[in-house]
Length: 179
Image 1 (tube, rainbow, N blue to C red):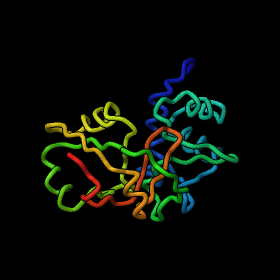
Image 2 (image 1 turned 90 degrees about the vertical axis):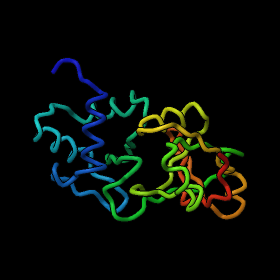
Image 3 (image 1 turned 45 degrees about the vertical axis):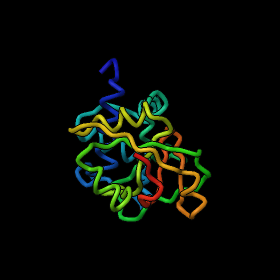
Image 4 (image 1 turned 60 degrees about the vertical axis):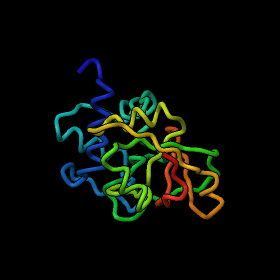
């Protein structure tokens, strides 16, 4: 393989680290980390000829910033495969954040608030355009919700900013959501 398809590699690594580490014989620690060398071996066992340099390059070039490498280990930022919640450091959010969803989900959200569902955290966007892009992945009429993030933070809702620009939080009560 002369030219590496970094987008496809990123999707494969995400699959290995976020969804099915057992299919790659990977054992993630409770924060989602695995040795980079173990990932290389796992990928090679699936016929993907890559080395640690190639994986580092994939992470560096990725626009979506799905992975983190530190001290010879790698993890997915949004570690769905680990039982324990990945620890984050709370930061003060901007006044408003945004969440893209579909009309069919709106009544539940307005009743119960924004919930992580099958994720560890609620995912939020810094601007409406990004929320539109994220929300448009779902089928249905797009709705962009405005989250009064700063007000929620001042009332003990924790927010976390990822290097990718995505904001995460715990459940957000509906009183902080504006249609």
